[in-house]
View (cartoon, rainbow, N blue to C red):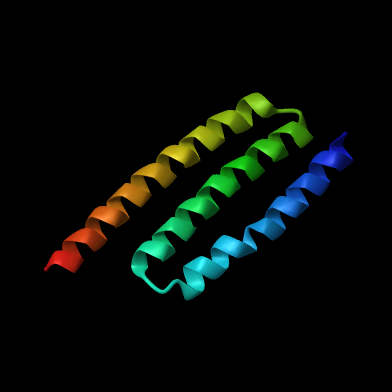
Length: 88
């Protein structure tokens, strides 16, 4: 079963390249912001998959929740900052 989770984690890591491309080549700042939020969401999933692989899901859920909160607050803060700079 661990092999299955490792294969899924590898595929998810490959899927992470799509939002990385959007962050790197995004035509607007908001496209880059959306790509960064997508990277954060996929990273949370990877953290939980590693929790399943190591058999310590309870500990990794706490880490994932903390990372999710930071990702959400960071996305909101960046959106407000870029909105304020766009209006000025």
